[in-house]
Amino acid sequence: MTPSNSSSSAALPAPRAARRDAALRVGAGPRPRSCAGCREEAPRAQLLRLVLGPEGALLPDLAGGGFGRGVWVHPSPRCLALAAPRGAAKSLRAEVVTRPEQLTEAIRSAASRRVAGLLASARRSRSLAVGSSAVAEALAQERVAVLVVGTDARAAAEAPTIERAVAAGLALSWGSVESLGHLCGRPAVAVLAVTDEKIAAALRGAVGLANLQGYEARAAVVEPHAGTALREVASLEDG
Ligand SMILES: [Zn+2]
Image (tube, rainbow, N blue to C red):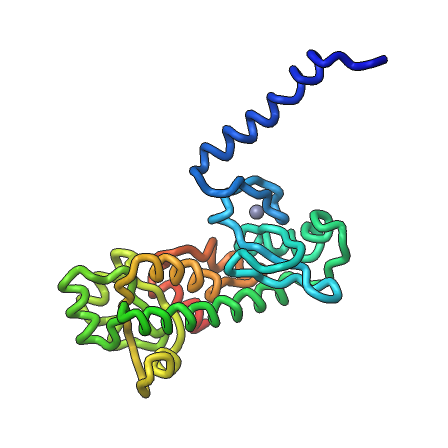
């Protein structure tokens, strides 16, 4: 009845090697995770981490390093609806009470706070050009990593240089002119430019999550993603 060493060692390495190969395919980062919604494997960079909070609440962990038991999910309306509460409960083997709409709202507000934090850090590191003329200058010097245009910034958004940047996928639509101003210590700011690539990349992700649509609205917007045309986002938020 003793299993032979040769048969067990022949059976084990194959899946391990396959897993290692899969990890190598997605680059040198951490191994891929399964989405708690659709159950498909994806690189961590494409997934959002959710942690189990008190009383079965599922909370977004935008930085991905928070304490607690967690699951990963595609930040899409469909996968969030599958993950909250059932998919996450199954993965965590715990009671989860959060509904998709609550989770979407929690992600939106955490992402908005992150956007504000990233803009503050861009400002501190002097990687921020504020206002139409400073932005036009930064665009002319090709220093712009990403533009942020207030959702109600009609006049600035129609300026030819800004329109070209929007068309090129260089612009994000986020916040009101008043809230952008508040972050920059001015009464109103229609447009600002971030010149740091790392901050810009983090901003694209955070703005995508801040503009996340609910599951009910999935017919109106397929997937929030980086580089969404300004007008599409603006018209969705108007409606
Ligand atoms: Zn998924």
